[in-house]
Length: 490
Ligand SMILES: Nc1ncnc2c1ncn2[C@@H]1O[C@H](COP(=O)(O)OP(=O)(O)OP(=O)(O)O)[C@@H](O)[C@H]1O
Ligand SMILES: C[C@H](O)[C@H](O)[C@@H](O)C(=O)CO
Ligand SMILES: [Mg+2]
Figure 1 (cartoon, protein in one colour):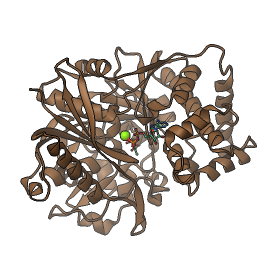
Figure 2 (cartoon, rainbow, N blue to C red):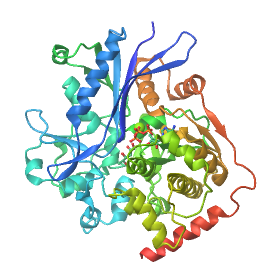
Figure 3 (tube, protein in one colour):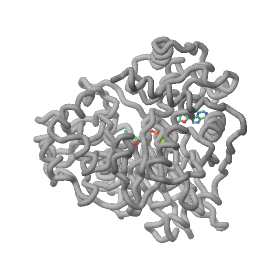
Figure 4 (cartoon, rainbow, N blue to C red):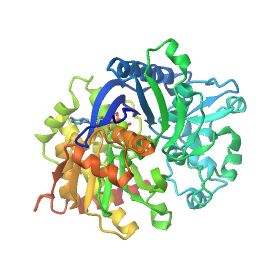
């Protein structure tokens, strides 16, 4: 009988436990067992995640797996990147983890790179400059807490540790710290000493697919759990999403479209040259020795904030439906502008941006959502052109996965503006990539090529082709708008 695999996939906006099995007709069957919300709150002066709540939700979800009749399962954990938990010498967390959207790192890059030039850092690590990278968070960390810290654990590694008692640092997520040295493949000693952190404050680095251990029986005293063997998967959720992307051949790009839009392609060697540095592309490590050459784009975070701004009275599909009734490209917005990272009122921020740039101000929910989707599509198309230029390639297909792959309007606009075929789905690609690494570890699936073929044959995917004579010249106008904005900022 084929095994039962549980993916714990926790994004910035929601978490879920998905149960996967390979059926008799060789298809991956995926069912949602448990879903819960996620989010950060201001606690003790910083925006923090409630990690104990997340662990409780995971154990609640595992109880549901047992109730569904599964007595023994494998389990993998993936979450968002860069954030960490400080653990003391007794194995206890020193405080709740601070969110990457907290303001504490607003000036950290400038402070840290006064000694280390950005070129030097990028040449060493190949990682994008985002002020919330772990390197800058630790640079700003409370030194008294760091002094009491035995281990610094990335979020999914910490969850695995709490469940199994085993500590490891999985490389795909470790690479998002901007502290791994591309050549040496280990934490960079110069960078560690700059932020008063010691090598032994990280558990051993492990590759995706490494067996971690069984969920401790202690947890069985309070939760009715199946026997659960934890495998360290590609624990950065985006790395799992890339594993779960049903791509074939080589001239494809991925867009992991959720809270963030992570647009890029999979490389076998990193690309940390001048153009990549100038365009702030990153070489996050992938599963099986690959690199995720990608750019962080503000993504559907903006839509999430707008939904909350309307007091959540509309669902995402209702908001998307309202947008389809509006004309696109009434205003150009640099969707990656810092001002959209965590404003108090996203709707007002978008309207102020349009007023300041002397453009039509969106007022209705449909106009606001169309402004977001149209400018995301433009941003994607612009970045796909840059990807081709930096890598000297000619990408043919964009695989859009994650919740955003449900947005037909956005998928179609992206295809038409970029000229690429868009293949949309699966929306739960992250969870699918999570279980695929588990299945490869147990030998149930041969390798990632076989796995991606299995995904293509197991899930409904939608194709979008560029629509002729649509949006002529809009992308070029958008690109000159962005150049003008950049000049304004200098
Ligand atoms: N039917 C839909 N119509 C419009 N938008 C949708 C739909 N379904 C999902 N979305 C969009 O997808 C987003 C959630 O995507 P996803 O579930 O991949 O994010 P997540 O995994 O919770 O978070 P993260 O991106 O941090 O992993 C929502 O914020 C919403 O904007
Ligand atoms: C902050 C990270 O870049 C972000 O979390 C992104 O990598 C991610 O994990 C999206 O879910
Ligand atoms: Mg996600």
